[in-house]
Amino acid sequence: MRGEGVLVEALRMRGVRKRFRRRRGEVVCALEDVSLEIRRGEVVGILGPNGSGKSTLVRVISTLVLPDSGSVEVFGVDALRHPKRVQRSMNRVSVEASFFKKLSAMENLLYGAKLYGVSDREARPRIEEIMGHIGFDYKRAAEPMEHLSRGMQQKVALARALLTSPMLMLLDEPTTGLDPRSRRDVQAFIRRIREAHDSSILLCTHDMGEAEELCDRVGIMVGGRIIALDEPRRLKERYASGGRLPDLEEVFMAATGYTVEEASAEEGER
Ligand SMILES: Nc1ncnc2c1ncn2[C@@H]1O[C@H](COP(=O)(O)OP(=O)(O)OP(=O)(O)O)[C@@H](O)[C@H]1O
Image 1 (cartoon, rainbow, N blue to C red):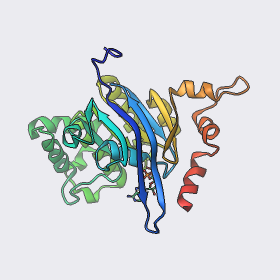
Image 2 (tube, helix red, strand yellow; image 1 turned 60 degrees about the vertical axis):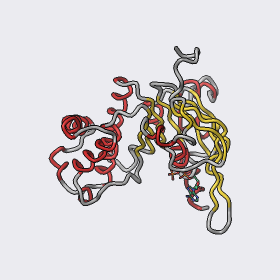
Image 3 (cartoon, helix red, strand yellow; image 1 turned 90 degrees about the horizontal axis):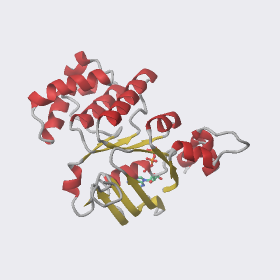
Image 4 (cartoon, helix red, strand yellow; image 1 turned 90 degrees about the vertical axis):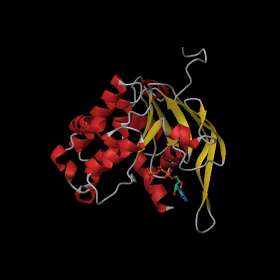
């Protein structure tokens, strides 16, 4: 039971800091004192412009990047000390997903399933089902990955993550680059996983509507810091003025002084 220490949280990060040194010797604070918890079955969104640190956050949790300081626990296991153990309980979807480009989507998915101990026989019907849900034309599953559009490759990355039913899913901009129809398919599918499974999800996005609709809590990230984290409704109440509830776009603006586009453009100029 929650609160009695029997159920540990899916994720518990405390005071995580990660700095990078750029070529000219300039230091970038990608994560600055980040603390974040995700409860089991909870979907937490992180909204932030380009360069705010979202990918670094996901990479630290998935043990691809070591933080300079702070702690990260996934289902109570120290991710810094036991990376292999925590890797098995989570899966990351990002645009930089790596595939064997000459192999087909199906071959890549079967290979991905095998790494998690799922046999071909078990995986095939599940692949077909998942592809149906995310609107991937199953007939194209036999084509080499390099023939597929970026959006379709993104769907294969999502299918690969879903295939192994991870307990913690890290979705780094899962719908960026998809056409509106595919975006809706993917969002609907995330909603289904959320309803049907005990999966806990971290969803990084710069799509306000997506964050609001899919997430139990939303964090606003700027300059490597999470400056607000709450249920969308409560975030809106916090920044309400004149008896009117703002939308998340306005909340972002009130919290940061920028629109997401302006903040992204500023990072691009650096
Ligand atoms: N390996 C690296 N070396 C140097 N700087 C890095 C490295 N990785 C990230 N950074 C810098 O750290 C900051 C945060 O980057 P990060 O990719 O985490 O942001 P993001 O919010 O995911 O952005 P985007 O939405 O563009 O992917 C940026 O200033 C970025 O340039």
